[in-house]
Image (cartoon, rainbow, N blue to C red):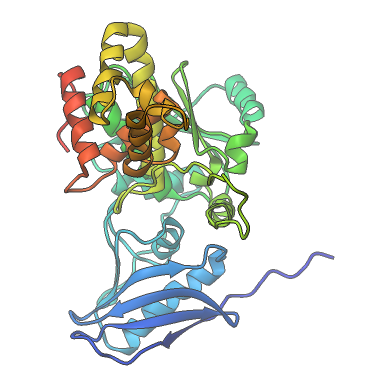
Length: 406
């Protein structure tokens, strides 16, 4: 006998302090199934319920998040407010559930549930692929989005290679594109349209600015590689113009599992042995940019650099020298070698700066260092840090025809 399906969760908003700030701002605990689900602050001064400072439990389930969204809408309605506004930096899983509840808003923009009128319904369509396309259209204005076809034999082959029973293809094309970007994905029930939109938007934007180096890139949500399925790798770029992404950036269930895994990984060990180093962590993006934006930008740079290193060998050497100069060394390679305790002090200081200003994963090797610097440059909002400003100057020097306006 199969176990019964879990019923809908109930979430109670519990005020943690009195109203002490102008506009009615106060802290709340969202409690579900007798346990803390999220901590948040709620402001209502402008007639809208605005939850901020989210701290959602990493092991939350979709039914709990759906109940949390419903409780916010009910709270706004009970207070006679105009609706609910979720800030752009809300976790992607919660944004997905909010959109399903009728919230609307652009990519990397706040989501709004306007209670003054009827709430929009979910995208309609006979097939899952059609519903996905309908949900993507308002998130990617200006792009021509179509369902592509790989041919029956090639789809069957990809289904085996990529580890999915059925594969869909989305083709995205901008006004100036002669070749569409192709995104291959598993056809399953719990796809996240906003995640697809983030992937497509970042890849198309990078491709347009640095064409033609990445014009032939194709992206696949891939289940064929253990590192991608397990979450050890977020993405993988191949010189054959293929970028493969973890399926966690396509599906709710996989992203829930990855969120728990990352939370456990980032916890410091209770007793770390002497000399223990934490697992290298890649740049995560600064709101409103997301981890998905950062990963796609990182992998797109790998494709650009494959072309750069192969076609402009001397320039690629000078490029690494320019990055080394920013960190106070002769070359980027010396920055990476600064990990060793017996290396010159300048190299060791540069290594520490690279880990601090960019990411610990950037210290892996020169190729990952430049990809992480590109990711920081791309996924930093206004007022970029010094390392992003320096990387922008270096890009201007070696990619003079690229559109580098941020």
